[in-house]
Image (cartoon, rainbow, N blue to C red; front, top):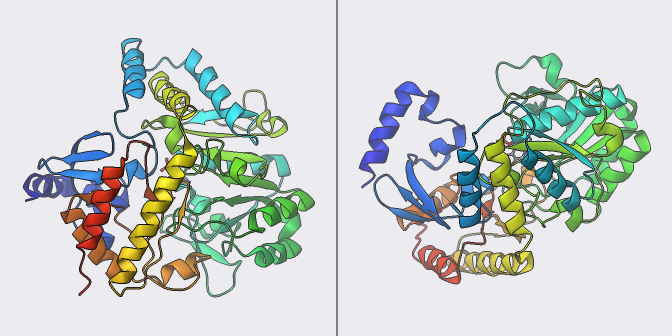
Length: 424
Ligand SMILES: *Cc1c(COP(=O)(O)O)cnc(C)c1O
């Protein structure tokens, strides 16, 4: 049935490490093989074996308008004909920067890069430069791309002791990364009481979407805003997922918190490789060439990518986020009912156009809670949904994504598939 995907994957494994260009795509967590995709349109993917899927991954977030949306495609076609890279400024860079600055209250100036990883790495460099401090507070289970300082793992028991999370990173690098539990305001206060004078920045996903979906509890983000201000540290919101998704103006608009720096990616590239970091002018002006903090990129502000991002944001501005949020909430709620009616513990939180699937009871506030979900149940669910044409993220720790292209029929089809799933 998956004949061509299977053969491609076999070839890929001898040419590309693990056969994939980003690890989670290999589907190892769910004991499956990856599907090779031939094309995508709206909320549907078609694999190389001509099977069609309703897509709840959406390239991990960027495709909030659905795939191959007409206005975005048209903008890109136009850009292709004008040449795809100049290594010099182009008009759409200014237009996209303006859309971003107008949408996000915390962003007065922004610099384009090529990925979320680059954006987070550059924001941290800037925070360290402007504070003259080295330490960064990160929350366990939050993902900020794969730059060295963010790939820290929790060391033995002590909350603030961290070790490299992968070979290849010197312990001296992650020694400056302080790890705390998400949603634990007290731990953040204690950490600042002990290390405050040495902390350059706190980086946080304002809605955690890389440990399943874990919204912030009341007061958590406010506490981070208060203590960073008190101690003269920089508050960095990583809005790579939540930017233009938690609300058009991101989680900072939704929760009315004004971060010093913001990290963006995914949606702002409209499906092309784009990231951006931005923030208050007093900080951003210190980025080269105006300031001394070096940061650069051969393809940054790429005209094709800018055209895709700009067309995406302009279309999004005209759409009804509240309606999409309601559709997502209804869908996730019904999915939860269906699963629990089968006698398995299941929670399906949602926020804006994101949803989580946790196979466990009890409150989920941080990574430790998320980790206790039943991964075997998730794997059974994933496989049976995929066999019925429903494409979910191949990990219990990713967030489900909904687009403006998902119709009532698409949600109904996904719920019908869930009704057929068996857990025995
Ligand atoms: C995806 C993601 C990143 C990394 O972005 P890349 O473009 O994959 O480098 C950073 N932060 C968050 C919150 C993300 O979800």
